[in-house]
Amino acid sequence: MGVDEQTIDPAEGAAEAAESTTTAAAAPASSHRYPIAPGYRVNVRTGPGTSYRIVRTLPLGMRVPIYCQKPGERVTGPYGTSNLWCNIANGEFISDTYVYTGSDGYVAPRCD
Image (cartoon, rainbow, N blue to C red; front, side, top):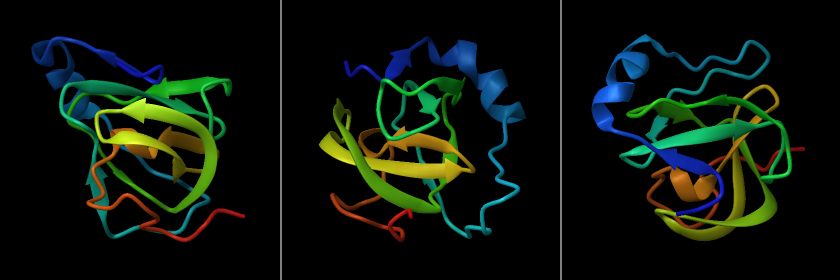
């Protein structure tokens, strides 16, 4: 299990997932949302690494937009090991290793 996630019973997170939304007031609209690995509640951080502050935790079954991506701390998750981090909202990042993008590389522009 990687540093950036928690696992919980799927029944505990089902209600939260139904109520949760991910929007970014300052980020451009993304028409595609990518699923978070099944069974994982992923910590959302202020930057591309586990030393950055946690701002929230995504519920089970969440799908997220990816506005841009940038390199950061190397993390191991259900989809491998990578230093790629996804910006899912203004100032919010998750490790690409917890997002099913269908690619080992960039699927969005590089963040500034």
